[in-house]
Length: 116
Image 1 (tube, rainbow, N blue to C red):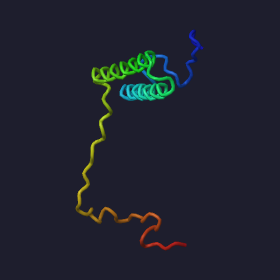
Image 2: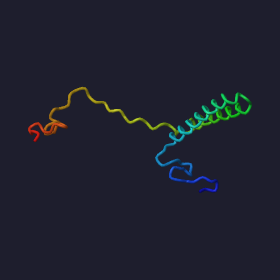
Image 3: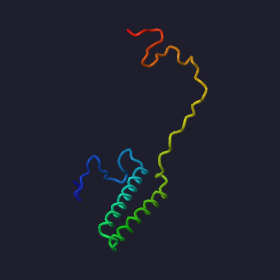
Image 4: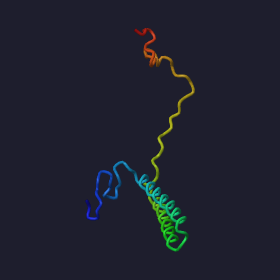
C-alpha cells in the first residue's frame, strides 16, 4: 500500500509513462472517455437536483477538462493514432498455375492419391 491507501498492483501505473504497451494516444483517448462519462453523469445528476449553482460549477469544470484535453492532444505530436498498415494491391490477372504444382488441396489431399 502507498501512503495514500492505494495499492500498486499489476494493473496500476505508478509513473507517468503509462502501462507497458500503451501509447500516449491510447492514454489521451482513455482520459477523453472518462471526461465524456463524467459529462453524462453530470447530466443525470442535473435531472435529479436541478440546475443550481453547484451543478453549473461542476458542468463548467468538466467542460474545462474537455478543453484542456483537446489542447493537450493538439500540443502533443506523439498523441497521433498509429498509422494504418500499408495497403497491398493484388493484381486482377490470374496467378501462374505453376505456383500450385505439387500442392495438396486443403481438405482433399493430393490430386493423385485417394482417401483410405
